[in-house]
Length: 283
Image (cartoon, rainbow, N blue to C red; front, side):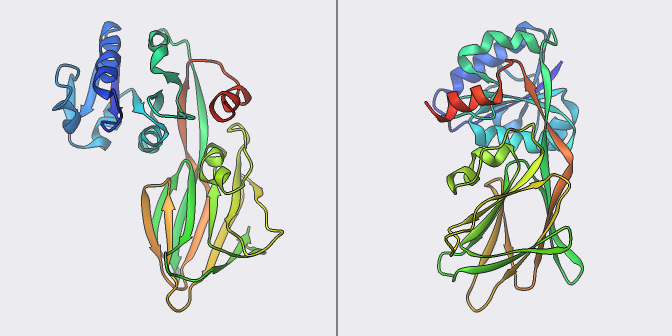
């Protein structure tokens, strides 16, 4: 089995954790793939390397992300493009997307005995258009966030649902999240927690200029068109999964819908969503 290991080198204890993980994988006959930059640090752990993460992902059988939710999120998005499953090993604080903690490393043997399930997580397809031309397109596992610049005014948002006029907001921004992303920024902004098995798109306004604006949960087959009103010195930025940023110009329209691509998470421990949520968020 060829396994791509993506460690977060900024995490405390990453050297020891990566070595332990790779040793366990080698004991089961696996070949470890890494980026060239990681191989320089973990030379004894790596069997094959490349400078191209897409090449490595395409050639591997599965991805193991070692770090926190951010590390898992980035690796899962690339893995989804190539229909590869991912296992998250938590070294962060919450590790909401992680399948295992490092203290549970012995359970990695189930990856080789096929004692696991694959959980498919829906993703969002987002595109930005102007005068019928697509200016930008990407996919999101967590959320698509529209936020104003530091010095800009509050922004008006008009949202069309399946081509019908639906909602109008005055707010600092808007969050469109998947159920996976409902426990991230959307939750901090007052949005609901949604079980990942419930396919839906969650809309949550950021600091709305109203006392009655609340989150709305749309069905997963919804098409949402967002028309922001950008005037004077207003600036609007779109951030995808916290690390991909695109500046939205005047008269641009943002289109959001369910992606045809799904993220595939390896589930080794059979914990219910409610139990995971309680352990991670309420303790």
